[in-house]
Length: 274
Image (cartoon, rainbow, N blue to C red; front, side):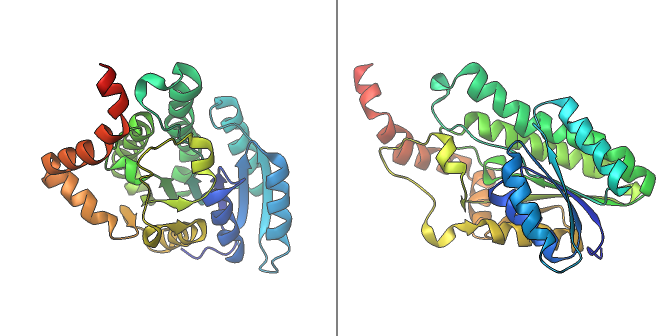
């Protein structure tokens, strides 16, 4: 797909991967619809993209992706002002990482499902008739390594990303006859605001090795490449594919290693009390 002049919707565009992705499409001369709750951040990004000199245009839409009415408004405004939708990047999402019994039933559990799962499904549902009528389109769903490998404290986040994986796989097989491609991106650790809002508290200080950390720009570049040359899924960086392979074919080893090196050391005090 020639990206210049194409209409792209990027959700969660006020920071991190979404912001970098919108900027990357701007460099390609696309018409970028940027959606998120923080409209001040979106307006600043829009000014930057409009001044790139690539012929890019922007449309700012303040939207909460947990609300169907906001999603419908996002799509209707895009059609009204730009006439079509060529690319949808479902990026909006967040994580709350803690032991399941510590997560708030509404603010942590329900909210993650509402944004990470229902937001993706409902946004795609609203965009799909447009792309089917055009008989062309590209849908990129931002997943995570948590969508392939579940780890402690990631219960709800992993559940939401596994749901996105299953949804995308089924959708890909539904819409391909209309010329619509569905791709999934599975980044490992990315330097964004994610960790600041996730509430991570770890005694072991376990984290992604620095040499495997990605920048938001690297993920954004992968998204653009997927539009040009669609593929079902892309695990980045590629080294995480080893973990995916082990989790699939030797899950007992992954269980043992994770429990003995992370879960027990992290919960040692609680285990002693019991």
